[in-house]
Amino acid sequence: MTSGLYPPYRLCTTGCESSSWWLEPKGDEKRETELHEVRQVRDEYCDRLHSLPGCTGLSIGEDADGGYFITLYFDSRERIDELKRQGRIHDSLEGVFVQFEVAGPFVPQVDAQEYRPVPGGVSGDPEHITEGYGTLGGWVRDHVTGRLCLISREHVFRS
Image 1 (cartoon, one colour):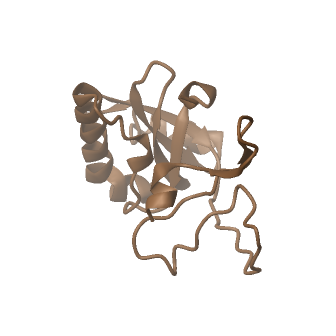
Image 2: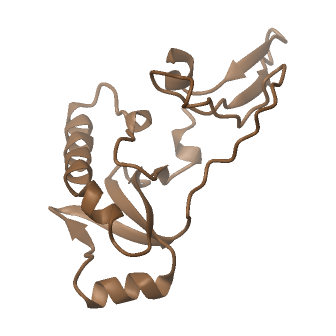
């Protein structure tokens, strides 16, 4: 319903173990297969990509047309240009489009204070959660009933 509001989607990771389950195109077998193939490419190359000089992270994203791509994040544009000149990075990996951005390093921001109610935009603590975690979307008021409701993504509630 709101997916058109935020393209392109990105999942920024600093490790290869991260998933992109939040991109799940449930019920669309063609897109599920396409995402699975992009994940396989990401997993196959993840360690090598992270070991590139200046690489600060990678992600899988979805463009406005529903296509999937990999983004590599580097510490500078000069580093990207140098690695391209050296032939160490390319615009595609096994047919998957790759884009390059300057960002990072990605450092988790920790606030150990407890909040009630929990404000929107807060992520779960991955050190204390064994299966999945995510960011709480926020609080909204149902315009029909007036009830206060929590809004987020399925994976956050499922955790």
